[in-house]
Amino acid sequence: MEKIGIIAAMRPEFEILLERLENSYMDKICGISFYSGNIGNANVVICECGVGKVNSAMAATLMIHEYECQLLINTGIAGGVGLKTKDVVIASKLKYHDFDTTIFGYEYGQVPGMPKEYVSSMDSVVMLKSILKKLNIDYISCPVYSGDQFVSSLNKLDNIDKEVPCACEMEGASIAQVAVRSGVDFIVLRYISDCIGEENQVNDYLSFEREMAERSANICLQIMNNI
Image (cartoon, rainbow, N blue to C red; front, side, top):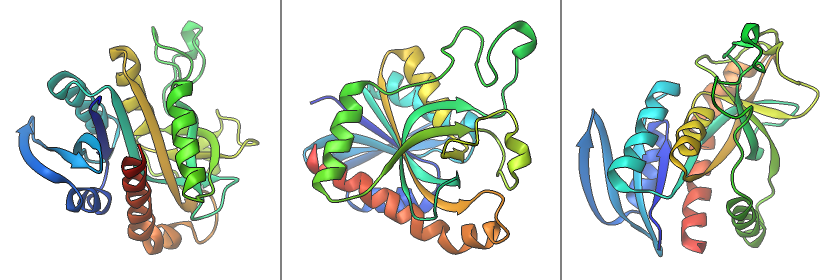
């Protein structure tokens, strides 16, 4: 069975995954601790990458290069636009909301030499959706946008289509970019912790951060047990 890399940005998600890892051993590379072992029937490597695009891209690169992972799963929380707190989101596509080379003819969010958007393979999407359906977990498939900021105002998202429900976070697109460049597949799964631009957004985030991170990690565990 192919090896699966699971990347969590934050400690609460990572700790839950680590508790369920069997036959584990740890390597530390470039300041990141990678734990290899089994969750259910899945052969996995997990890590807490840290927040932001550089940290997540670094972790994804090492998982592919050092551990030969053929599927990367990124689990975590996100802010929502047109969504509700506690919604489960599968990324239908990923782009950056803070990358701009449009002056040279590229689309907003597109990295020169890379696709306009990053999309998981149909096989992985079908697998994920069938497992969530089996587990009676409702989900929304929508775009996910990544950038190096906590988005607290819709004004910061003037260059994306906010008429379509979407999620904003800080790691998914960079993991997807590394995966696409390396020829491996990826899945980005998010739990909505707060709704961008709402008056109580920051309080919601602080209240739901750990709960939503734990729920996201638990869904990831259930996926591993059903692969």
